[in-house]
Length: 254
Image (cartoon, rainbow, N blue to C red; front, side):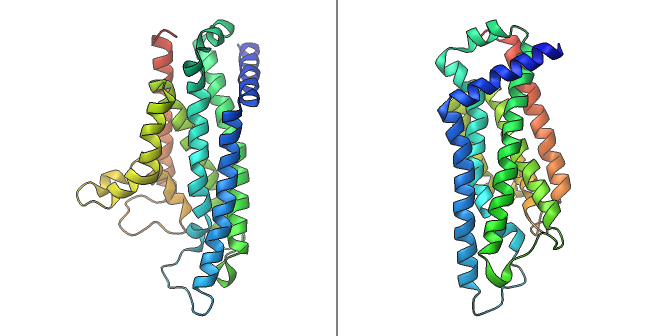
């Protein structure tokens, strides 16, 4: 079993290394995170150059502005690592090479999750430090209260959202449909829903909204979750998506 899994993981890594769309999506995550981090820091420095920032200003949340945008690249990567074989028709040859679907799926999730973890560490840490370096007097340092836990949480948040996207992609088996659902949900719809009376509190439990609380020093007013309970909710969503994806792969024909 262990040897089969190691071979399957090696097989998945070779796909990531050879498919440019996956590589570029990871590069996109880092580039967008860094570029927008510098822009955010410069805007904050200019805005508060001659006056103190209001008490509501959160330098930790501002420092993760670039990462929020770069997350698009990780979502795209998570979808592509699963659906590219369905769109190209190579899923049959992949399952022929790794006939045990549990091993095949585990290898794919491990490969995607580890790649997302490595890129998340790079994007989260470097973009946060860049934003603080350009933010001027309103910046915080790594030793300030809440900064290190927020950085650790940010890495977990982005990694789990990528794995969640992989699970949904395995369930739907279409890059177009999956990205058509997840990208608007994560970057537009969920934010709108949290501001609608009557559904706002329920929308706080959506995966991106719940997990994203870790990017704040203090949870925004009106939220019933905090940073770590929000991550726990995201972890539950991620586990459910991963299980649903596996069940779909096991029961359907290639």
